[in-house]
Image (tube, rainbow, N blue to C red; front, side, top):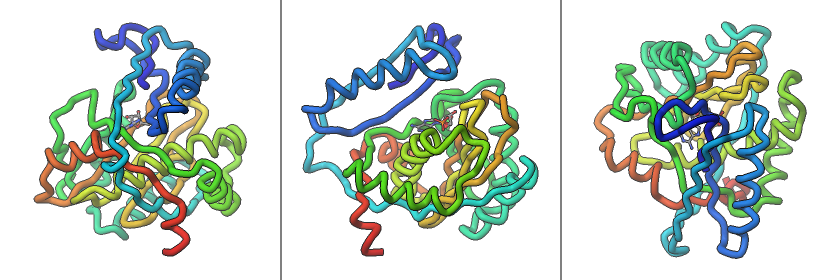
Length: 261
Ligand code: AMP
């Protein structure tokens, strides 16, 4: 689902909300109602254009993957938090220049993109030619909602930032981001990710590299409605194949895999 304030096709619609789910057919109707509700009563406003696309997926084509391991770091200022992202991404081999270019690219966006920029992990060059749309990772979900919630609750208990709008919001944001980041990380050529939310009242962002997802607070000033996402790829990665995987391969993040890790 992708919801905007105005005419999303004309490019004038301010982004309100987006959501990706992968569910059994019996649940589709209730999920559609949830998506409608979410688009109409979002903190960012009530959507006037809502695109909901439903694709049938062959269960045999679903790839099951483990979630990334969740860590948290809390800083007192945005600049300290953003500085920390250099060190974290460097652990995954991503160059300083690539991180600097990614931070600058997100910070200078006039408004949020629908998807993510794809950037070379060493040179920092943007690799996709998808402009303001970017790459939207889709066709993913968690396999077992209750188990997954338990896994997230444990992670949040380890490092709960105060200014996030409460545990419920933090759980919902974390659920979506960990599913997305885990799918992103399972693609060929993936090096890492940098993200913070469009939600003006949610300053926690994250970086991911290897098998680690590290929440970082605060990645932006409160009240800032612009977020962004950068996916880093190693040089030489087959770009079209990786983007196709992100956009189309059905993936379920499965908690059980995590327990055996
Ligand atoms: P959010 O965390 O949902 O506020 O999203 C933050 C930013 O991530 C957005 O401004 C988009 O640029 C990007 N984004 C959101 N959803 C997706 C997605 N499904 N795939 C890729 N990028 C996304």
